Image 1 (cartoon, rainbow, N blue to C red):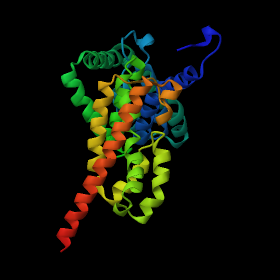
Image 2 (image 1 turned 180 degrees about the vertical axis):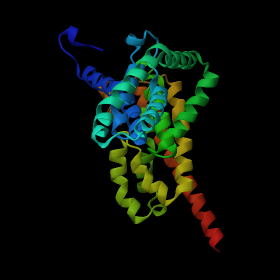
Image 3 (image 1 turned 45 degrees about the vertical axis):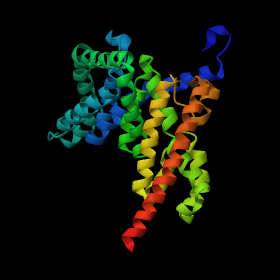
Image 4 (image 1 turned 30 degrees about the vertical axis):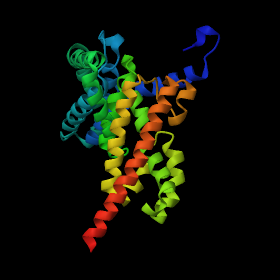
Length: 314
């Protein structure tokens, strides 16, 4: 990738840099908002700073940062620590000072020391172990994991299961592991695009409302937004979710088999054109197979489910 030293940055370089910057702050923001949900504003800054520290390999002297695991650990621990700290009966005149100055400062000091000397290196070592496993795992284990991640990404269309898989894959980018994040780039937009196209292929299987959503599902879904598939899944949960999940898992396996890499967050089907998905041809092969398979499964499952309901109602 060409940077400033070669006479000016290329557009892919700029996109990749912005994506990496987003990653740098995504995990601390996640930790901060976990703490915020528990302890309100006094937990926000300490959790952000400590989670950022836990992912700063240069400062900690570790091979890997704490990743999304660190965000969860520090978000929860700092959140409950601050909540406990706030529970004392301070004089009203001191409450504001305690909440916005003293509690954050004490929390940052305590958790900063613990993170630097103990927790940060431990979590960094754990992440290094996970990364070494992922890099050295034989294909016989790689493919089942890829299938599982693909299923999770397609299962609840932007929900908690999707987010767990997304954060896992995304957190590996800073360690130079791009293959698992490629699964996100391929699978995340398959369910809405497949649902939209299936609506045009077999219109009788879908409601009038779904017909109105089909085009927007294809357009928005093509930019890695899985959520447009939700109305289709809500209208017919069992066949739609089953089709999405199975197609997502198979697309995940194909992605790993083709050696795809995704360097940074992008805009779905345009990622290869921006240099964010490599090799580009492999992306379109994996994506095309995934969408085609999902459409086929939607039609087969919805047809079978409609026949089942018809028999049941007789």
